Length: 510
View (cartoon, rainbow, N blue to C red):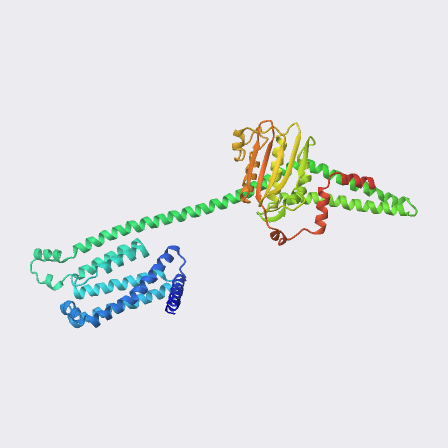
């Protein structure tokens, strides 16, 4: 039972201490340096607010004869005045300790410290005037005041405090003894002997040390803050430059796709025009037969399907080229590659076979969809440039553990080890001047890294190249929580990813 009671008491004490620490930490001080100093000052003021009255109460209760004979009876001002000064200064220091704590709790840290130090110095001046320098033990207090003024308030407060302490020490000189000397030279000698020069020089040395230390610390803090602001600005500018680079890469890809897309849209418009000629049946026939009605209905449906295909192609290009902020989403990498099939097909010349091999099951990743399209287009364009005489470009995706492996393989010229070492460096290119910027693969590398993925290359001269991208798989719950695609959009995308067989079927139905 005793053990259980002791354990409960210990836990209660720890809880009370934790609450006290939490209370100490809750202060409305904005400046980070003042806030850290305020945490310490609260503990110091709590300690001094309790120590000073309890210490005086203990001495007065158990050691009054010693106090009376050692201090009060030998005071310059008389016994009663000495007792009043001693008790009055202790009362003032106790009161200002609690008042300082209240000011810190209300967010006024510097006024609290300034007031506390001022009262301590005034109390020291009264004590030295009443008892003299050698009759008091105030050196530790004066050193503490010096340290607090320098560390809490800065260099100016430090030197003001030292000047005030010098005045306090000079006040401790016995004026009656000096005034009784009739001649000037003996008066100067006695004044010199009476001055607490050792204390003055010691405090001066401490002040100089504190001054240099505080100045060095504050300069280091100012430099660190300046570097932090500079770093924050550079990060912001780098992000802005990255977004501009991504947009430029998108526009470059759109420009490369423009000719092929124009051809595809011309085919779409040709289908629409071909179907629209069926309207002649409505004007030339006296009565519409069932066959005419069916043909006209099929023509209208063909016009609708062709128009959907054209608008889908245009919307895909517009969405891809938009200058939007990065927005990661969870999607199936297989369906995303299928959606890119028309764009990739137009990017590659007829001499290059495009082969897409993805599983039927979902392979979910979390990526910015537009940036994912940009990466695939850049890698496909790189494969195209590596096969000037034609070949095959294969895109495949598979699951490997908790990752998705996306591979882009080409049967091109390959590259040497030195080229592979620099392939992802910005502005590095093996193309002739004016044929490439050297930013495509660098952008791809940055995009993959930002998605917590990895990209590697396998290549040998004359044997083609393989870019392998490893991306972490996303959970199915993340995909289900995101907005889906409407049924009309799914139908439009299905039309977009079909090959040219749908065009032939539409023409044959006419």
